[in-house]
Length: 356
Image (cartoon, rainbow, N blue to C red):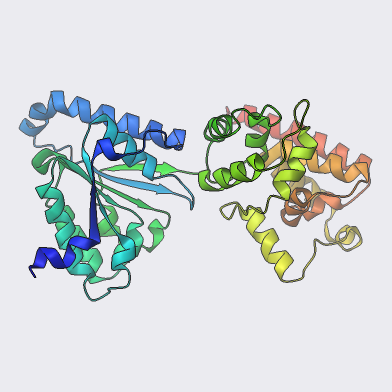
């Protein structure tokens, strides 16, 4: 058995025509891919001029984003539009073979060059080449030997943990796209597609209720909502939809407050009672805390205060917010509204001064 046969099962080649055409991808990631594709086209026209100046396009791309970001959409878009093949290591075949990862890395790069033009997609690169390892050093050496200019190979890597990677490895990428949580547009487009023929579900309401969620988490929620019994007449009221989202069982792990609330619950802890909060905050300090909350999210702060002032049972989303901002429970309903309006006025004034 030749050396190629030993490592051939650690990589897979996908042709553009074999990609699914109805993939439900993250719109903002696709827009990033479109911008990069435009750069490739411009390089095709200006490549010779760059070379005469000693410059190179490179074509090594790092995609950085939270857990649940749809990095794959970037690669799928380029593969269809250029069009070019995708060379993709099979992580499930190599992560258990620590003794042969280095040899597999060398094989992937050689395989990509043989099948150029192509994309070499290193998904979750921090798993393949953690900091301070020989794998990381080897990846730097191999990556420096390929480029779109010389080999017609695009190296595209994705990570949700750039902090555990070597700086030297990060520096080889000459194009970086950073994505945070799924945008409102991402979520609305997702729910519009998922809720087709479900007139009872409002895509915009659902998108607004999962602010801060990753695209993968929003897709999980879409499945849960579509599987709910269809309402016969009219749209589901926003309040009921909010309850359905809260009880969906989908955990937005990238959303700090949601994760902390989960930890609080499994540890048997509770949000502090109003009595325990009362003596904790002097008035001046409380005004500063209100200003902080309003500056970060005025709409959500106002909504939670209205829920508190109503005297009705709080939703899980309300409790999640109060874990981070327990001082909102202090005082009478009138006090809360007064502090909220004062904080809003001061926040608006500060924004005008700062030109925002």
